[in-house]
Image (cartoon, rainbow, N blue to C red; front, side, top):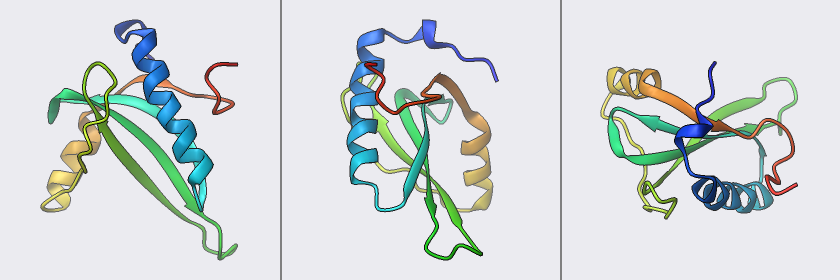
Length: 110
């Protein structure tokens, strides 16, 4: 997957990844793979996506994707992403493009 971090301002990355650190620190499950993304279904928004992994049952860990929306300047929008049906969910997921991926340590300032 190609990363397009040159298409996003460094200050915006820092704002959104600072929020990712807050999410990670308060995460009851394991939170991983924070990404800043865009979607054709939300043209004027940036989307922070991450995975939560519930390992309370070691034989059956449950993984979910979580999302938060941001304005193009990195300001939180306080919106939630909901789908009316499975087709709309699939359309949204396939429309996502990664702009920035926090590959290693969650602290992007290191």
